[in-house]
Length: 318
Ligand SMILES: Cc1cc2nc3c(=O)[nH]c(=O)nc-3n(C[C@H](O)[C@H](O)[C@H](O)COP(=O)(O)OP(=O)(O)OC[C@H]3O[C@@H](n4cnc5c(N)ncnc54)[C@H](O)[C@@H]3O)c2cc1C
Image 1: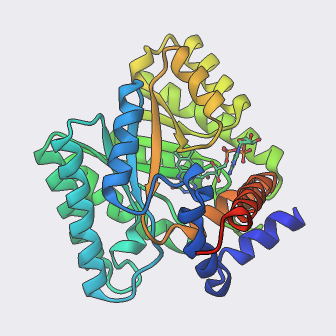
Image 2: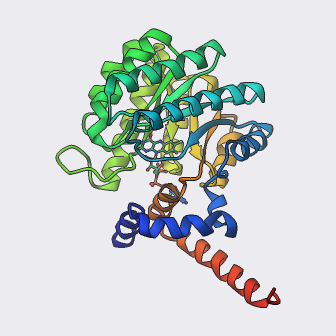
Image 3: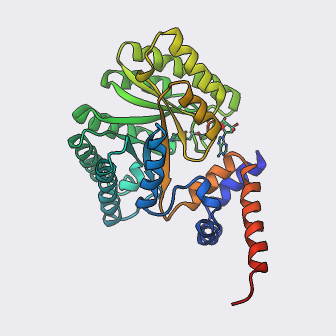
């Protein structure tokens, strides 16, 4: 836990992440979890995934923006991503973060841009998904999601099993019949609002999974399970079988490069698997959060760096 928290803390420090960012793509270790720095690289990774029967959700990495101009640039970039998915005929959508669309600057501006993106996707017969960020943004994310989904009907939203409020939020969301991506939750939240013990988060994840699948039998939700935990996957598969829910009425989602063994198993079982494909130049904080989730990943980074430095010392000086 200490190591996890330390790496997570480092991921918030530019003085640490910038030097890593300068080396990561060059030395290749970042490519395990990041599809590349450009949209073209992400599309090429997506083509490969789609040719193996996966769906994709493109995720442009980046942190909160602080100016309207930057938010508008991100908005145009998201629209470009949808249009490129369409042009390449890829089975997928995009995942957006509202803080990249100026949520900290002006909520109405953010809402109008989220709407603009969803409208463009809808015109092309596509969907979008909204990530759920830290708890300071939960209420406003739900509000914006609800208004855009009510109007356009092509949006999905992530809901975090570690938040006590999530069961109530699902009740509120049921009437708008959306895709709900259930995740455990990735932020550090205080104990008055979030379950702290991992085993208790797992219990709630199972409970909410069952709730979503039961809702799916009534048409209230399209459940998507965003987890690499084999126990969570097995629970959702068992519950969907118990409820006799057809395979196309729910899906699994996993992150690019993580638990590829489980990704193969889910796909081989005939379930839909959507892979979350992150890309962008600002990949380092994301990459370090993935390391913090599983400190064993640090070994593979160190191995890549060592292998590279051995190669470099063997090369003749130019
Ligand atoms: C598609 C998708 C979208 C997401 N969107 C959001 C979101 O919008 N908001 C949000 O708060 N969170 C989001 N998350 C992150 C989520 O909340 C968890 O932090 C993350 O998925 C780890 O939880 P887990 O369910 O995989 O289970 P864990 O119990 O953390 O992990 C289960 C197993 O998965 C493997 N594993 C997990 N992480 C790694 C890793 N980094 N490297 C290698 N193996 C690993 C290990 O084998 C581990 O034992 C998303 C996750 C996914 C899969």
